[in-house]
Image (tube, rainbow, N blue to C red):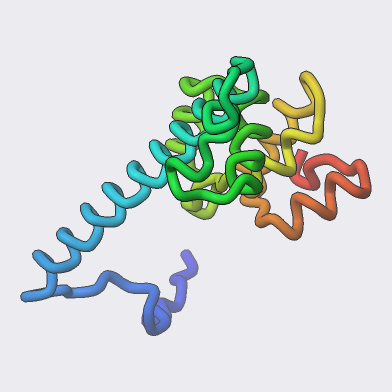
Length: 152
């Protein structure tokens, strides 16, 4: 029977003894979760607002363009309108809660790129983002090349 040589763990890969920092780390992790939830709700709300502004014709100019009232640029509102017309609020919530294979969440920028793809292809590409952990550059490259997942 062969015995395997046990190497010591490389620095940074073993368990970390946090000791007195444990409580501060827990607070930071909880704050990050609240921050992500707030960012997601902001994106969902902006998408809904942009969609509503686009769908409802109004007599007054300020009703057609709510961007000054909420202190965002018209371009920002148009960006969220693109996202808001492609996914419902509940679909966006699901997407923003998911994590990819590296533990990262999808961004509005990812969704803007995916909004250019239609139908089932969009769903497939969205799953690739999560399965392969695609950053924006890699997603853009795959969409331009028309290539799919390299792990499939």
